[in-house]
Amino acid sequence: MTSTLISGITTITTISAISLSDDFTLGDVVDNFKEVFTWIDSWLPRNLIVRASVYATATLITLRMVPVMLRKTAVIKSVEFQNRYFHRSTFHPDLLKIKSNMLKELKDGSHNLPLYNEELVLLELNAGGGSNLSYYPECRYIATDYLEDGKEFMEDNASNMAAMDITFDRYLHTIPDRLVSVPDNSVSAVICFHSLCSSLTLALAVLEIRRVLMPTGKVYFLEHVSTSKKYSRLWLAQLNFQIQMYFWDCKFVRGNALRRMFNQSGFKVQQYNEITLDFTGMQIKGPMTSLASHAYGVAVKQ
Image (tube, rainbow, N blue to C red; front, side, top):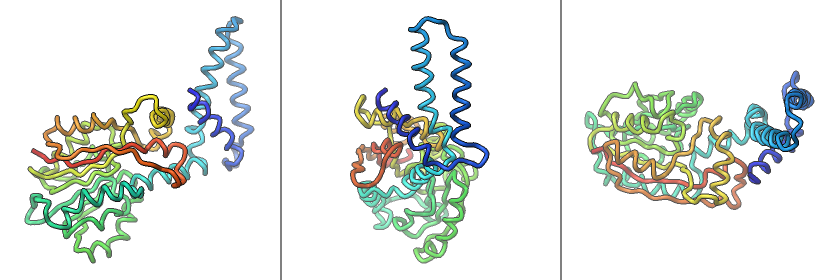
């Protein structure tokens, strides 16, 4: 609770630095809250314990909702931008090393993946502007993202893809559990980095991945997950910031649930590991600190 209160109070202290719209000022917000509390007070019984409990609960809810109410302001939107950039670039040194080790078999030809019409077909979920293209060999490439502006960034990378002998098949504006325009059994491998958190239903996303993969096709996954260490600082941060992350189309996935979901959906998990990132010296604060724990690995369609 202390972490929650501190988060809310810290947010409130930054409001004065935020430029709101011309017709909506900080004074309006304060006046509205005063009216609400006055109305609540008029309905409360005179019992001090009841009144104190109601006020404490209302204060806690108010503090927690402040980031949500201010999510369109400059300060909160800058954190949202950092969150989206982190999801698509996975710029942390440990994550870059994990990606390189997982995907190196694509470049050296030891992947043993099935071919569709004699072509290697890669499908990348939440591809952003194509930050992972350097890991891919000659192939037919399909990109998806639930952010519409990703298409523009990907098209800007068209010349780079041509130089790497990557054929850009198409860009799909969709979420991981809605790959309806991708035919059954038509993809050699799915690259799923920081993607499943944006799906509406994890189980459906895994089933969609299985549907589009060819038999013996692989899914390479790297996802931020809920920490298994209860009551740790990271656990409190994830509990504290889950509302903000939800409004940024990002939900926490449990690591054990992810592995179990693959195993129960017709995959064989060949590799599974977990890691907690160290953000020291990286200027990552607030909600972003809740993304430290990750699960990664490779699963093969049976």
